[in-house]
Image 1 (tube, rainbow, N blue to C red):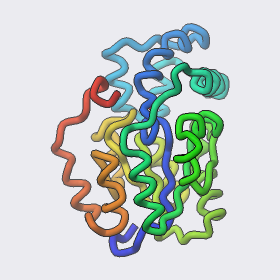
Image 2 (image 1 turned 180 degrees about the vertical axis):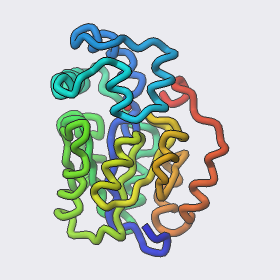
Image 3 (image 1 turned 120 degrees about the vertical axis):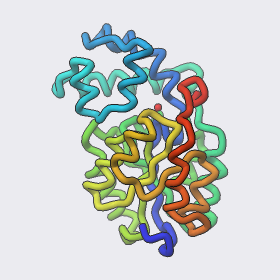
Length: 236
Protein backbone atom coordinates (compact mmCIF):
# COMPACT_ATOMS: atom_id res chain seq x y z
CA UNK A 1 0.00 0.00 0.00
CA UNK A 2 1.47 3.32 -1.08
CA UNK A 3 1.45 5.55 2.05
CA UNK A 4 -0.05 8.33 -0.07
CA UNK A 5 -3.09 6.19 -0.99
CA UNK A 6 -5.77 6.28 1.75
CA UNK A 7 -6.78 2.87 3.08
CA UNK A 8 -10.26 2.04 1.75
CA UNK A 9 -10.44 -1.60 2.89
CA UNK A 10 -8.95 -2.89 6.14
CA UNK A 11 -9.39 -6.65 6.61
CA UNK A 12 -8.51 -8.02 10.03
CA UNK A 13 -7.60 -11.43 11.31
CA UNK A 14 -9.36 -12.07 14.62
CA UNK A 15 -7.58 -14.36 17.10
CA UNK A 16 -4.42 -12.71 18.38
CA UNK A 17 -5.17 -9.55 16.39
CA UNK A 18 -8.47 -8.23 17.75
CA UNK A 19 -9.27 -11.03 20.20
CA UNK A 20 -7.00 -11.71 23.18
CA UNK A 21 -7.27 -15.47 22.71
CA UNK A 22 -3.70 -16.62 23.42
CA UNK A 23 -4.23 -17.20 27.19
CA UNK A 24 -7.40 -19.20 26.45
CA UNK A 25 -5.60 -21.19 23.74
CA UNK A 26 -2.79 -22.11 26.13
CA UNK A 27 -5.33 -23.24 28.76
CA UNK A 28 -7.16 -25.64 26.43
CA UNK A 29 -4.19 -26.88 24.40
CA UNK A 30 -3.21 -29.81 26.63
CA UNK A 31 -6.73 -31.23 26.53
CA UNK A 32 -6.94 -30.77 22.75
CA UNK A 33 -3.54 -32.46 22.34
CA UNK A 34 -4.65 -35.44 24.41
CA UNK A 35 -7.92 -35.79 22.51
CA UNK A 36 -6.34 -35.57 19.05
CA UNK A 37 -3.12 -37.36 19.95
CA UNK A 38 -0.45 -34.83 19.14
CA UNK A 39 2.53 -33.61 21.14
CA UNK A 40 1.76 -31.67 24.29
CA UNK A 41 3.20 -28.17 24.51
CA UNK A 42 5.27 -27.11 27.52
CA UNK A 43 6.36 -23.53 28.19
CA UNK A 44 9.68 -23.84 26.35
CA UNK A 45 8.06 -25.36 23.28
CA UNK A 46 5.34 -22.69 23.29
CA UNK A 47 8.03 -20.01 23.04
CA UNK A 48 9.73 -21.83 20.14
CA UNK A 49 6.48 -22.38 18.26
CA UNK A 50 5.89 -18.63 18.10
CA UNK A 51 9.05 -18.30 16.00
CA UNK A 52 8.06 -20.95 13.46
CA UNK A 53 6.10 -21.09 10.20
CA UNK A 54 2.78 -22.95 10.23
CA UNK A 55 3.98 -26.07 8.41
CA UNK A 56 6.96 -26.32 10.76
CA UNK A 57 4.61 -26.05 13.76
CA UNK A 58 2.48 -28.92 12.47
CA UNK A 59 5.59 -31.05 11.94
CA UNK A 60 6.95 -30.21 15.41
CA UNK A 61 3.66 -31.24 17.03
CA UNK A 62 3.27 -34.36 14.93
CA UNK A 63 0.00 -33.21 13.34
CA UNK A 64 -0.64 -34.60 9.83
CA UNK A 65 -2.68 -32.38 7.53
CA UNK A 66 -5.63 -34.78 7.57
CA UNK A 67 -6.07 -34.14 11.32
CA UNK A 68 -6.12 -30.35 11.03
CA UNK A 69 -9.85 -29.91 10.13
CA UNK A 70 -11.01 -31.95 13.14
CA UNK A 71 -8.68 -30.05 15.48
CA UNK A 72 -9.91 -26.74 14.07
CA UNK A 73 -13.56 -27.74 14.56
CA UNK A 74 -12.83 -28.75 18.15
CA UNK A 75 -11.13 -25.43 18.89
CA UNK A 76 -13.99 -23.46 17.30
CA UNK A 77 -16.56 -25.33 19.40
CA UNK A 78 -14.60 -24.81 22.61
CA UNK A 79 -14.13 -21.11 21.91
CA UNK A 80 -17.82 -20.59 21.12
CA UNK A 81 -18.69 -22.25 24.44
CA UNK A 82 -15.97 -20.53 26.51
CA UNK A 83 -17.19 -19.01 29.78
CA UNK A 84 -16.50 -16.16 30.12
CA UNK A 85 -16.16 -15.34 26.41
CA UNK A 86 -12.65 -14.68 25.11
CA UNK A 87 -12.16 -10.89 25.40
CA UNK A 88 -11.13 -8.29 22.87
CA UNK A 89 -7.93 -6.35 23.27
CA UNK A 90 -8.49 -2.93 24.81
CA UNK A 91 -8.91 -0.27 22.15
CA UNK A 92 -10.49 -2.38 19.39
CA UNK A 93 -13.73 -0.41 19.34
CA UNK A 94 -11.98 2.95 19.17
CA UNK A 95 -9.68 1.77 16.39
CA UNK A 96 -12.54 0.40 14.26
CA UNK A 97 -14.58 3.56 14.82
CA UNK A 98 -11.58 5.62 13.72
CA UNK A 99 -11.26 3.66 10.48
CA UNK A 100 -14.99 3.86 9.73
CA UNK A 101 -14.95 7.58 10.44
CA UNK A 102 -12.30 8.02 7.75
CA UNK A 103 -14.28 6.13 5.15
CA UNK A 104 -12.50 2.77 5.46
CA UNK A 105 -14.52 -0.41 4.93
CA UNK A 106 -13.77 -2.87 7.73
CA UNK A 107 -13.86 -6.65 7.28
CA UNK A 108 -12.82 -9.74 9.21
CA UNK A 109 -11.34 -12.92 7.72
CA UNK A 110 -10.73 -15.55 10.37
CA UNK A 111 -10.29 -19.25 10.98
CA UNK A 112 -12.72 -18.88 13.87
CA UNK A 113 -16.47 -19.28 13.35
CA UNK A 114 -18.56 -16.20 12.61
CA UNK A 115 -20.72 -16.95 15.64
CA UNK A 116 -17.71 -16.92 17.94
CA UNK A 117 -16.33 -13.74 16.35
CA UNK A 118 -19.66 -11.94 16.74
CA UNK A 119 -20.02 -13.19 20.33
CA UNK A 120 -16.66 -11.71 21.28
CA UNK A 121 -17.27 -8.44 19.43
CA UNK A 122 -20.78 -7.88 20.74
CA UNK A 123 -23.55 -6.40 18.61
CA UNK A 124 -22.41 -2.77 18.72
CA UNK A 125 -18.82 -3.41 17.66
CA UNK A 126 -19.90 -6.05 15.12
CA UNK A 127 -22.01 -3.36 13.45
CA UNK A 128 -18.76 -1.57 12.52
CA UNK A 129 -17.72 -4.58 10.38
CA UNK A 130 -19.10 -4.64 6.83
CA UNK A 131 -17.95 -8.14 5.82
CA UNK A 132 -17.37 -11.36 7.77
CA UNK A 133 -15.73 -14.33 6.05
CA UNK A 134 -14.93 -16.90 8.70
CA UNK A 135 -14.18 -20.60 9.35
CA UNK A 136 -11.19 -20.42 7.00
CA UNK A 137 -9.11 -23.58 6.76
CA UNK A 138 -5.53 -23.38 8.01
CA UNK A 139 -4.21 -22.47 4.56
CA UNK A 140 -7.50 -21.15 3.13
CA UNK A 141 -7.46 -17.48 4.06
CA UNK A 142 -6.19 -16.24 0.68
CA UNK A 143 -9.38 -17.32 -1.10
CA UNK A 144 -11.51 -15.63 1.54
CA UNK A 145 -9.46 -12.44 1.28
CA UNK A 146 -10.06 -12.37 -2.46
CA UNK A 147 -13.79 -12.88 -1.88
CA UNK A 148 -13.96 -9.97 0.57
CA UNK A 149 -11.96 -7.70 -1.73
CA UNK A 150 -14.38 -8.51 -4.56
CA UNK A 151 -17.48 -8.03 -2.40
CA UNK A 152 -16.26 -4.69 -1.07
CA UNK A 153 -15.61 -3.35 -4.59
CA UNK A 154 -12.53 -1.55 -3.33
CA UNK A 155 -9.28 -1.43 -5.35
CA UNK A 156 -6.57 -3.71 -3.97
CA UNK A 157 -4.13 -0.77 -4.03
CA UNK A 158 -6.07 0.67 -1.09
CA UNK A 159 -6.57 -2.62 0.76
CA UNK A 160 -4.63 -4.35 3.54
CA UNK A 161 -4.87 -7.52 5.64
CA UNK A 162 -3.81 -7.07 9.26
CA UNK A 163 -2.86 -10.12 11.31
CA UNK A 164 -0.55 -11.66 13.88
CA UNK A 165 0.65 -14.90 12.25
CA UNK A 166 3.05 -15.77 9.46
CA UNK A 167 0.23 -17.60 7.67
CA UNK A 168 -1.67 -14.30 7.61
CA UNK A 169 1.28 -12.73 5.79
CA UNK A 170 1.36 -15.63 3.33
CA UNK A 171 -2.39 -15.36 2.71
CA UNK A 172 -2.16 -11.63 2.04
CA UNK A 173 0.64 -12.18 -0.48
CA UNK A 174 -1.34 -14.89 -2.30
CA UNK A 175 -4.39 -12.63 -2.44
CA UNK A 176 -2.39 -9.70 -3.81
CA UNK A 177 -2.89 -7.55 -0.70
CA UNK A 178 -0.41 -5.71 1.48
CA UNK A 179 0.12 -7.09 4.97
CA UNK A 180 0.15 -5.28 8.29
CA UNK A 181 1.77 -7.22 11.15
CA UNK A 182 0.72 -6.80 14.78
CA UNK A 183 3.29 -7.71 17.40
CA UNK A 184 0.99 -8.65 20.30
CA UNK A 185 -0.29 -11.97 18.95
CA UNK A 186 0.86 -15.51 18.20
CA UNK A 187 3.93 -15.10 15.95
CA UNK A 188 7.05 -13.23 17.08
CA UNK A 189 8.14 -9.97 15.57
CA UNK A 190 11.17 -11.60 13.96
CA UNK A 191 9.03 -14.26 12.30
CA UNK A 192 6.65 -11.62 10.96
CA UNK A 193 9.41 -9.30 9.73
CA UNK A 194 10.80 -12.14 7.62
CA UNK A 195 7.68 -11.70 5.46
CA UNK A 196 8.44 -8.00 4.83
CA UNK A 197 5.13 -6.52 6.02
CA UNK A 198 4.11 -3.11 4.70
CA UNK A 199 3.33 -2.00 8.25
CA UNK A 200 4.32 -3.21 11.71
CA UNK A 201 2.06 -2.19 14.58
CA UNK A 202 2.97 -2.32 18.27
CA UNK A 203 -0.37 -0.98 19.48
CA UNK A 204 -3.91 -0.76 18.18
CA UNK A 205 -3.68 3.02 18.56
CA UNK A 206 -1.11 3.20 15.73
CA UNK A 207 -3.31 1.62 13.07
CA UNK A 208 -5.66 4.45 12.07
CA UNK A 209 -2.92 7.07 11.73
CA UNK A 210 -0.59 4.75 9.84
CA UNK A 211 -3.22 3.67 7.32
CA UNK A 212 -4.29 7.24 6.65
CA UNK A 213 -0.90 8.81 6.15
CA UNK A 214 -0.16 10.25 9.59
CA UNK A 215 2.63 7.68 9.93
CA UNK A 216 4.59 6.28 7.00
CA UNK A 217 5.09 2.49 6.82
CA UNK A 218 8.84 2.95 7.24
CA UNK A 219 8.25 4.72 10.54
CA UNK A 220 5.96 1.97 11.75
CA UNK A 221 8.63 -0.60 10.92
CA UNK A 222 11.34 1.17 12.94
CA UNK A 223 9.82 -0.12 16.17
CA UNK A 224 11.61 -3.45 15.50
CA UNK A 225 14.22 -2.76 18.18
CA UNK A 226 11.58 -2.67 20.90
CA UNK A 227 11.46 -5.93 22.93
CA UNK A 228 8.64 -8.39 22.35
CA UNK A 229 5.80 -8.55 24.82
CA UNK A 230 5.92 -11.55 27.11
CA UNK A 231 2.96 -13.91 26.93
CA UNK A 232 1.80 -12.68 30.34
CA UNK A 233 1.80 -9.09 29.05
CA UNK A 234 0.00 -10.03 25.85
CA UNK A 235 -2.84 -11.40 27.95
CA UNK A 236 -5.06 -15.81 19.79
